Image (cartoon, rainbow, N blue to C red):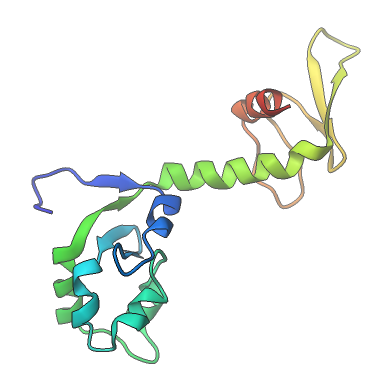
Length: 151
């Protein structure tokens, strides 16, 4: 991809789907590479890449057991196709967290106002997108919308 063209963005889920000999993508940090055309040329064999297809290969590139050369890193640039969509990744994680809460979320009228408070067996209340779940990031207001829509 030429530097003047703005990069395409891919979700982790989309990258993970490209894990075959016919379509092999990898991540190097947040950069996405389509290495399908490189499989047969890889000095370690195509099976080595295919085992890691659809995933982040940063650890493998940095070693051990084999730290890839700067030349290998430059060579990879010809297979660059875009960037990892961090918003999509965050959204997927957020969605999974909401899914974890769904089985035990209940609506309860609030005695002090006309608002509805969502309660959960894992926390005392989810109110206006604020959550006090131990070990969980704060749920935003749209989490309440997601919970309501998925009921």
